[in-house]
Amino acid sequence: MNEASALFAAGAQAYASYRPQYPAALFDWLARHSPQRQRALDIACGNGQASQPLRRHFAQVLACDASIEQLRAGSDWGGVQVFVADAPALPLPTASLDLIVVAQALHWFANPAFFAEIERLLKPRGLFCAWCYGLMQIDGGLDALIEDLYRNTLAGYWLDGRASVDAGYRDIQLPLARIAVPEMALEASWHFAQLTGYLRTWSAVQLWERQHGRDPVAELTPALQRAWGDVERPRPVRWPLHFLAGIAG
Image 1: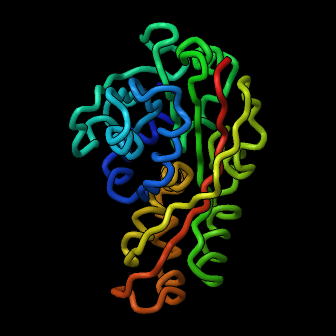
Image 2: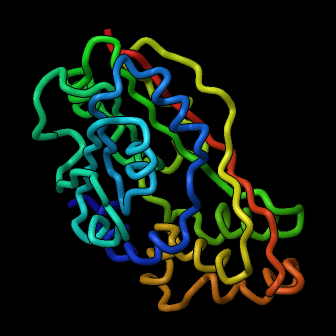
């Protein structure tokens, strides 16, 4: 297990509780652009946030992760075939998949070995789609505090690959025929406790806390509370999605 997988394994329950859900329109689009709707695979699936919505569209959905702890954090795999595997070495037949997705994880393993495996597994005209999201958008005051945490307090604590999220995956070369994905975003209505719970799922927060013996989110909480206002009042939160998609030859 690599360092990223180990960190997310340690925080698997928090990740399942606080990560936002993807929009239904995304899975409708994926189904429309897949050559068939027989078999889809969610790589680095975590607790199944992208796996379960695929069940509405595909006859068989597979989901894999390098972390057994992440898989155990999934609340209901109902009908999804789950297995432990590293992204560049998947125990599946050649040309067996209509769709492969990677949600908020491609930046940890976007290398030639992984993309060679993608090309092996996809059927002709099969669809690959990866997506990521960066900093949330709430309002100017809160956004500035969260960006300062992200770029200054946690500087030097993000694992290799995080820069690709900041770039919206524009720095990753995809060896497939590129296809554009419509603009989409995650949207949620959150109470204040959900905000701080989410921030603690960041890998850099966990590394900073291990290094310093203090919780950087707890230290920022008073300022966040002042900017939020009534902590019992929900606020709308938005994360723009960034996509990397392509069709196999």
